[in-house]
Image (cartoon, rainbow, N blue to C red; front, side, top):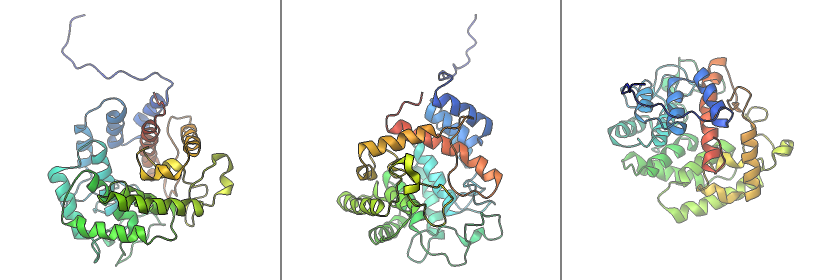
Length: 314
């Protein structure tokens, strides 16, 4: 057959591997953004299409909106959407340059008096929002919103004036935690894993690990989940496992768990793949559309977590 000059397509994985099953699920259900993310992570796809898809959610103020995070609908920029955008840029190695400079200007514009981020900016008022997400006129600073953003910017060696006070807020918030819940602890880990002061980060992480175990915030035995309480306000069965805290083997949270505890949690994660190839959404859901939009991203992240810990996914 004569050569046509067309580029060769990536080789498809074997049809019954976790990646192949997930790939079919993603093509059937995902937004364009998650389709390109899957292609980038598992099929050797380029980063440019991911950036192009992400641009559809970017606003003139440098932030991101348009239901990038499905629990918040409407066009306005929000810290939650913008943190999601930073995670995408970080995942494809594009967390730098003018794009991130504009993001930092947006973060500055919506920060609270102490220089940190609120969970929800009041500009969300008037647009559809999950009923369990409060929109208030003067929201407080939140480690949940600020920690992951500060961590991502430090990991990518971004330097901006906004980071100085936001970093100070994260240190104060992390080091004063006495009672917490899994998502807040995970936000703290996201900050500590990339905080520039490594001895201080290691000491703070060691204390948090003891808190997690003392308050049974990690389900260490997937076969006995009734032994682990679900945090107030969480969905029934919304347990968090060692892999939720230690997304990679290099995370400071990895030291919180024995090899056996981590292996059991990863086995449990692998077994959660559904018949349709996707992974389930464990958190509270408020409408069919957000749940459907969330599942492909959960699926991509589950595969990335398994692969980062050396589990074969195909």
